[in-house]
View 1 (spheres, rainbow, N blue to C red):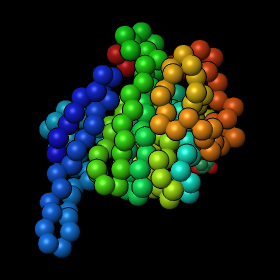
View 2 (tube, rainbow, N blue to C red; view 1 turned 30 degrees about the horizontal axis):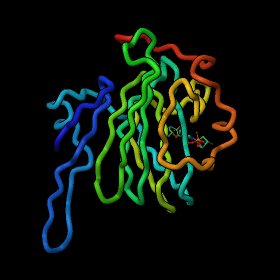
View 3 (cartoon, rainbow, N blue to C red; view 1 turned 180 degrees about the vertical axis):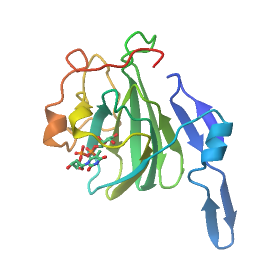
View 4 (spheres, rainbow, N blue to C red; view 1 turned 135 degrees about the vertical axis):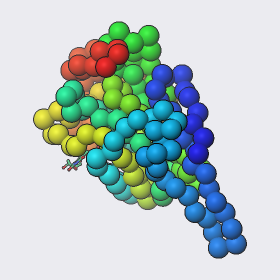
Length: 186
Ligand SMILES: Cc1cn([C@H]2C[C@H](O)[C@@H](COP(=O)(O)OP(=O)(O)O[C@H]3O[C@H](C)C(=O)[C@H](O)[C@H]3O)O2)c(=O)[nH]c1=O
């Protein structure tokens, strides 16, 4: 397992070790002990799995407010996505900045996103499945969103066409209007 830091402190790309042989391959997709040994000391409590039928579907940008904030360990198990994290921790030197990476069935990469970041992805193929672990359960009352195309964040999504969005995401507020209660340093 290899961890690659990104320009957003705490957002980490994880490349699992893939054991290939004449039958195919095997990999540990999650190991509590290995992640803890590498400094990611998180206890995940819920697994999520979503299916998006069409290329150009965008889910996000989402987060849960404290005290129900979530860290996420995201992977794409079918097709390809462009996965994005946005720093929304007040006082952070990278507040409002984004990082994106392609997670695909083929590259098997994962993205670890700590609490204090909004998360979203755009599908790059049809028939996409995304599976991710969270360290806090779902709370509709704490679920919030930020507009996917907020120019103050200026995410360079790979497809310029208007994405397929949920009604909730179509109406999400801009970062400057959004309710966020994350302070730098937790
Ligand atoms: C997130 C979640 C949702 N739901 C229910 C609520 C709705 O009835 C339905 C779809 O929810 P939503 O439209 O919020 O699903 P996504 O648009 O895929 O949202 C997710 O996508 C982005 C990329 C994220 O990072 C979040 O994990 C999450 O917000 O599932 C649950 O029952 N449990 C859950 O944990």
